[in-house]
Amino acid sequence: MVIAMQNPISTYYDPSLTLYEARDIYFDRFGFDGGGYTAKWVKLKAGPIAFYFPNTKARVVAVRYHDLHHVLTEYPANWVGEAEIGAWEIASGCGRHYPAWILNLDAHAIGLLLAPRKTYRAFMRGLKTYNLYGEPFTDNLLAETVGSARRRLLLDEPVDRITWGDRTRFFFWSLLSVVVIAAPIAAALLGLVWLLSSIL
Image (cartoon, rainbow, N blue to C red; front, top):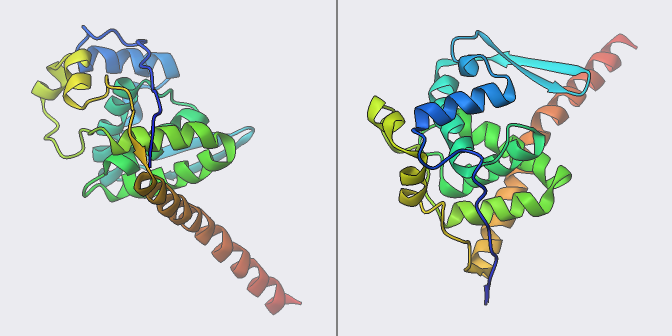
């Protein structure tokens, strides 16, 4: 069975801009200080609560592509937008960038709760398009225009062929994302129970 699903492209980032220029606009738009590539820790806020995790070299390599993907897909850098781009990157593949797989699975799981329809649509879009993870990160890449990169990755095309096989993939990756995000929580709870039982 084939199901049609349109996916119009917004144009916040002008197609004539280079990826380098558009990325600077993205940084300014969401308050990123040069992308935070040199920071030792990454700060993640959930309301009044802030979480920190190490900004490893492997993460920095992956996030340089991730930031360009935000520009090309037009997904914003907020909770819902990160869920969308997480689902899109999973579906289009993260290659050897294991931090991207892990962080995207977490984002995908959060998206199932916050914006399931947008997460679903982003995943389906990812199945029909390509991303930059398999390409060398060079000055030539940053010099490419937004419009050219979108055309090359098929991001300017509507998503118009969704099959039951695609839906099965979405179910599999959604289930895996829930397992990935729940595993450390479950481990922490078990550790707390063990600690309390040893004290009491």
